[in-house]
Length: 141
Image (cartoon, rainbow, N blue to C red; front, side, top):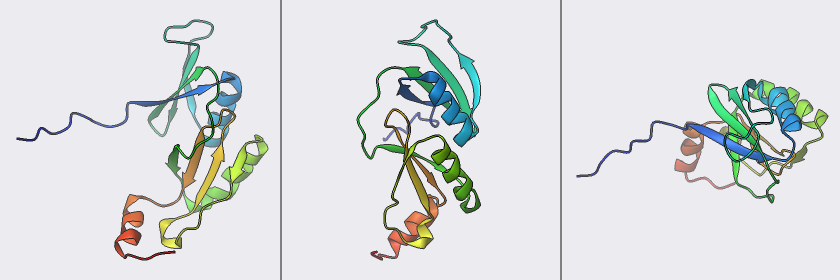
């Protein structure tokens, strides 16, 4: 008999970053993050850290060295109407915006950007349902 998974959802996402203050500003400006904890100069875990809430998701940042750029990313769902002002926020923070990939309109639009420590974020207007619907049609770009 197969046992069902005990996974209930995502507990938290942690990003390692060189400058906690700079990343704090980015999280607040782009994601409307609410800071709920700061370790200050204390190290309860492996380094100084801060916790945030973004749409009821726990985001942790910890002090450390940046990673190499890759396509590993986290995507946040946003409305189509919010993309233009979010793009302006990203640009105002001096972050690197990537050209979007070719996609079918029914999949939604995306805005990809790297933070100061090479974490890739996507702001996406689509959802799993629309993506699967497009893929099930067997269409190619």
